[in-house]
Length: 323
Ligand code: SAM
Ligand code: SF4
Image (cartoon, rainbow, N blue to C red):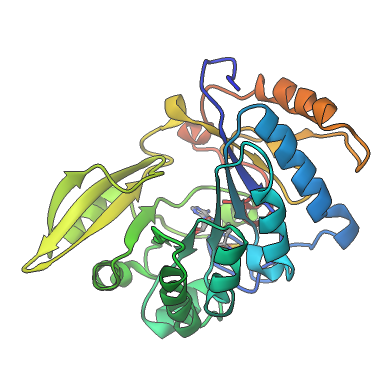
């Protein structure tokens, strides 16, 4: 499906819950967000119908996100349902990794292709500080389990905040190189309530300089499904690995944007970095064709570019919309 600017839209990011067992400082307020009642959150049948409609328009890749997608207990069942939809070639997931040690294998068997795991610190104390109470041990176990289960390439996402985890940049690079996983640093995005908080972004230029102090850096094409990241090969003595820098604010990647998002309650967000959000009108008896027509109409409204250049925060929490 093409949008009004000729961009081929083939990638759907689905937030399947707004609940989470962590409270990352850059994503959720300390007290959490008001949870949507269960009946307002899309059921697996509704999600499958939505994905069928998207697939009929040319969407071939789906990423499950949230909130924390693994908080939906029957998640493997959802993966199986989506894997059976004609036209869906890849199902991936973004997770905080805290329950991957127990779930990776079952998810891989159900048809999950790969995972991105958020990891902002290796040091247990720093990890607790940024996630407000999370434990890093199970996440590291989860990353190992994901690799063993073949959910590869495993990519790690890290957000760096001044005074919170900026001393973790080099330990994260070392960990990623040792573990053979790709690490991407993501610039903090000004979203929802947390944008009001006093958090200072560490510009990726600075992250890059810190890495260059210890590692040789060379531009690299990056792994399959790279998306909006610039990749580098890092080398030191006999060790080498891949890191990516994702610049949603300082380097606009809108012209190649191929994606849209659906929130856990079924609202369509054509652009993460704009406030516009559209409601779908469907029930379990709505024909897929009718839902496809609604989606196609909404996609024609996908904006050309984002509003963060104007330094304005967007509405809605990342955990609701799906990062
Ligand atoms: N709970 C899962 C996780 O943490 O990976 C999936 C949902 S989380 C919202 C998805 C991604 O969004 C994470 O990698 C997280 O680091 C990122 N994220 C959340 N809030 C952000 C913000 N304000 N700026 C940049 N990235 C953010
Ligand atoms: Fe939860 Fe992920 Fe948000 Fe952290 S980034 S609070 S793990 S949804």
